[in-house]
Length: 445
Image 1 (tube, rainbow, N blue to C red):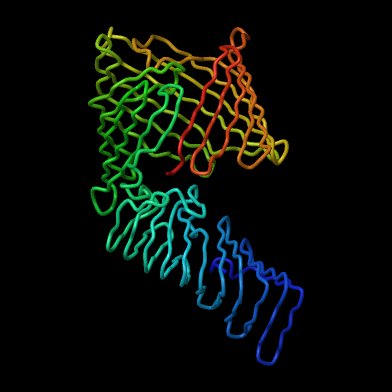
Image 2 (tube, rainbow, N blue to C red):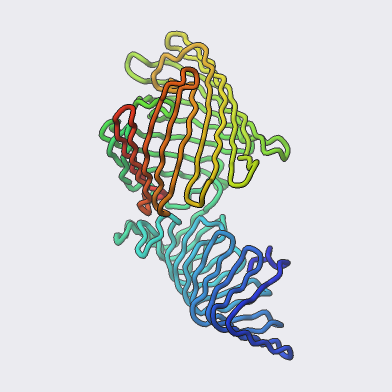
């Protein structure tokens, strides 16, 4: 059990329990359940000593700690030293970032050691994961670092490359998957780009990881090649970034692309108002936008938003409200635009497999943008969405949205979301337009 749970009472249940008071020997057999705080052990057989704190679990054992799970065989455990060992085990490290499977496994606090095994990320877990790394003498330190010898990186049954000795920082701004794997082309389909493929890679430029080179690429039938390269500096005062990118709009339903270069951007950290959960963040940008040969010029903008961590005013409900101000200056046509906006999103779970979400948003815009890229398609809108999950891999949704000023129906949408293990597929039918959309996207492949 974790050290933080040591003050919690320990409860033991089993079909048979035998305890000797004289020397502390104990034995339990059949449907064993041991719980302490958020931790739980399930096994068929247990023997040990209450005085020394040393126990054996011959056969299979399942250990649940927080939201993580580990399945082991032939476990020995020293409760006083918080150390355990197993002939073989599989599960998730305490941070939840890494899935491991191997032999000769030992656990020391938040550190997991495997004499031989494999590592991958949670979305890729399978008998043969979509991607994974194998090695010897593997050490996983919670949220800090991975080290191993004879590392080999795989995509399904194919070994992509190998290292003699491999070390990788994880957690924080570090990416937990090697760049040679993340750069590997991954298929996807979006309505704006069509079928295509893409990848990404992030590189730490200093030991602390405060300077990073972040790159990604995508090729698709409609947008062709869309790369981005960003040099970023992270500090307690925020993120400063210099970038080249080709992007599509988040606010406009049409597939409109723009090239930004050079582009300077500052993003502040979230500043919280005491313990209220209310926070403020801001960003500023300056650079050159090119939407077409005729629509190109300098752009600068500032943006601030205030929001809060989701409120839970009654059981199974969440409320998120927000308000913000954005101002943009364009060299093209000497245009300016000001946008004062606010909104609220309310989600209510009405059944373990069903929930309903309602929202309202309002943008008060003065001036205009000469680009189609950053136009806002529905500045004043309210809507409601009903969702039902008939299976853990499927979600069905029905959505209605109306123009808040006129009451006219903006959208009637039917959506099916399907989990394909290492990818997500979303099929959408927009009834008013009579239009189908298909999104296919890999997860953390």
